[in-house]
Image (cartoon, rainbow, N blue to C red):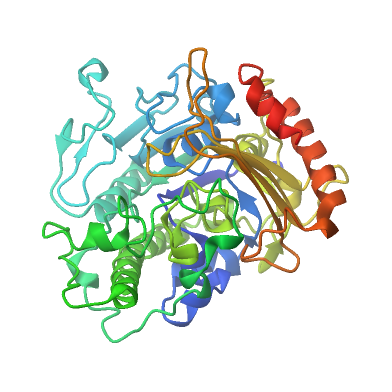
Length: 498
């Protein structure tokens, strides 16, 4: 491995599913390509099994920075604020000679620390003419996590502005010292407001539908089957049909007049996907500009380049939009890395990796040890094609928010290469004394060897009885190792052993 510390360019988008990156060769690759993001994989590695521990924006971002599970760093839900004094890998790099910067989406509801330079969006930020917060920001005046009109306003499209700010910082940096730049895009978070230059790129295309768009969820447990934000209008509270047929929808309303249920679903799916992919196109173009700059500067091969997202995204699979679930489309994070001094071009890495591993890995590349509080481990060796003999190849996942928020029930589970066991535990996030069962409890098991799309829950199949027993044992072990034993929820512990 190289002794010289590399520059690090960490590019992260918001809600960019692996299924919308053509290097992953999903159904969408036949109609939509991401050549610049693909270049990172072609000249480096594509990771097939990188997963988040909590598939929602703010918690995942906190986990990436701290290397800790949500219940340890305190950021379990969208409403939680990260402690600005938490140990993070940017702070450690800054103290050890790296120039550090973050541009774009922060979304941690706290003051930005650990960076020599920052220019970040307040809250979700706007797609057009967004505000940015910088070193002059009065953080005490940020009254709400949803506040988007604080800071300095910029004219233009947010993806372009973030890119320009990154390029400007790179040009002005001290070129005698290594840098760590986090380029954090707002896109392609909904609502998918693409730049007008991309409006017609998919006009003549029919986006392929996933088979599971029409899934019969009767195989599911009672804990999940009736929840989740749908493409169709089966969920009367939250659906793409309902959302996009609003007259004030940013890219124009979906016309569903005179359409039956199936026709409405098809129309909503096409609009949802086209708006989304047009927004992704802006991100891919941004990646191309950053790669071109590094190449022109002669530092492309001296820079570890990573492209990822804060979690995956449902694009019609299981009749879902959004994220939050443990099902793979939301659970899987795209992850592509280029560093030719260690990572072989065209590599495909199958090892199971979690976002608690990001901070230890980036510190490893910077020649630094992780803190004792970081729960993950470095996968630098895995990226070079050498899986450690004791690599766990399993992850623990927990989604803490209850159905009142986005219609997703609280649940946790374990994913290995071959199986996924999920427990929908039916309890709210917080309670004092009595624990009302606000959603029904249920177990699900998926045999990923034979059912990679998770269309057949085999939890009650007698042939899987021993596998269920073993996975429950592993789940209890992982919860204990993670420090998430639910001692305050005895009913959870009781059900867990059923």
